[in-house]
Length: 205
Picture (cartoon, rainbow, N blue to C red):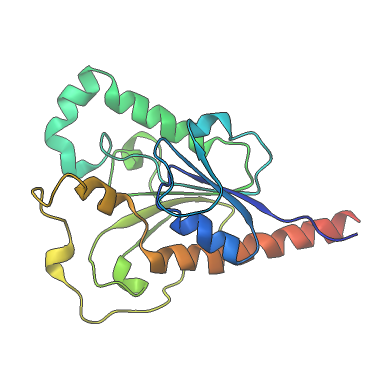
């Protein structure tokens, strides 16, 4: 009997980059966000919490960080007082507790490290073919750490943060996963999950 196609849910993604990269390596990959997808591909417009228990093999999540990132610490008092930060932390807890065997949650330096747990890995875009310098943290479950794919020696220190006055679409640019990282997720995590599922399938026959 032929093996079934592995299934991946990409939470809080509107760019489609991770979804499309996983599709390329053989997944039935679905993205979900409150915004429509910027590229063609299977996408659910709505609350990802309603999809978490639908039998996925892999979850890659990019929860909104506006109420969590330490870069906005000057606003924390107000966000704690009105409950925004608490709701954001609870959403992260829900994603991490999803009944999915292989999970990765991506985010910047944030209160997740103090209120939930420290990240399992920290990478930079310049490790994956991009010149930017930006700390990207991963919280992992049953997945290996990503290995660098293309070290960029000419790094741009000015690209650590985008200027606050860089326009109303600034937050979208910061949220999009770098293509090199998306490709690494698919090539390394995606293929790892496929191999693990194939081994489990054989062991159960």
